[in-house]
Amino acid sequence: GKAKIIYATDDPDVLISYFKDDATAFNAQKRGQITNKGIVNCKVASHLFQLLEAQGVKTHWLDTPSEREMRVRAVKIIPLEVVVRNLAAGSLCKQTGLALGTVLTPPLVEFYYKNDDLGDPLLTRDRIRVMNIADEAQINELIRLAEKINTILQTFFQRCQITLVDFKLEFGLGQMNGILLADEISPDTCRLWDQAKSDQVDRVLDKDRFRQDLGHVAEAYQEVLQRILGQVSRN
Ligand code: UDP
Image (cartoon, rainbow, N blue to C red):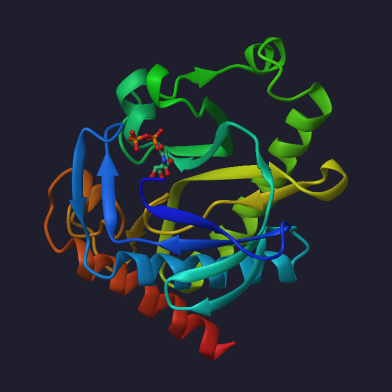
């Protein structure tokens, strides 16, 4: 893929996910590298998957054998980007006119079709059913899981003095068709705002620094990792 390479192992049920420094945005029209992003994202995602597992969320994470590699359960990826939004930002502001930072209560859970050729369009529940991507029960389960994950992550990031604005999840079907959280959760896939900063640009600790050329991209990723590690060691 764009940010990770997936390798097979001797065990058909286990894959290695290798995290690269390559960054893309706007459907790969913008390309670049973020120094040590792969290391940061692998460490951040590993911590968050362990945190979620400890609270009963099933994930594909098995272990983290090196700083850029995660061992994961092989799953059949459901071709949806499940986006959870606590505050309005990004495409939601662009498509609705809602002001940046508008608080969304309850949080919004949205589905986008994972399809680069179609530009990852926003889907409805009915479209997901007619496209045969998931049935009614699976859609309900994805929403339930997304809301549970949001509650756990919001609490965790709050302790890091970071506001979890929005994020994207991907799920897969594992053994016996159980739904597992897959892919990654990292500054590439979340909007994270530093609560210690009031400036709209200074506060950004995520991939928007790359998308919008805000500078200090690698430093922002390191800051997120440091906050998370500080939080973990204090527990
Ligand atoms: N996101 C992602 N991958 C995508 C699209 C979005 O990880 O292909 C994340 C993005 O980082 C943000 C959230 O999903 O945290 C919502 O993104 P949005 O729909 O606002 O799209 P964007 O403004 O990033 O185009």
